[in-house]
Length: 125
Image (cartoon, rainbow, N blue to C red; front, top):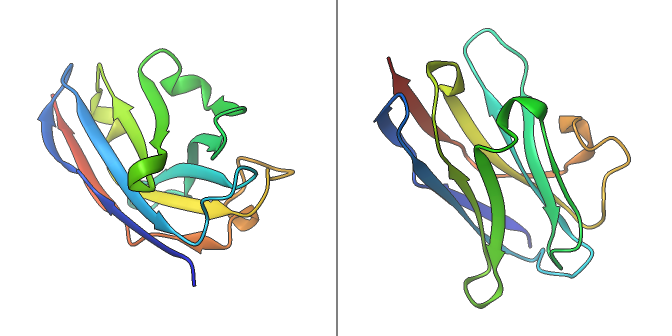
């Protein structure tokens, strides 16, 4: 059974940093893809970043390149999203997502069958 549990959200001032964590079970195969999405009120769920569990492939949405980093720790079965230089427009509920292989359409939420419950990130100006 696959489970994803996020933590690490909170309130931060613009320019600050936060690290989100997603503890996974059932998806720690080298080919598994673990991603982060975000959703603001009234908006569609937006792709943020994705990586393979092996660490061989990465992708980011342009708006977070150079500011966010996705990584994982095998020993803790945990995927992280390190967020720096945060902006008010980064405010959203952030979701961890997963699938058993690299998605054909990596930015489409429909490609990911497994989801966490979400964690709120609020960036104040």
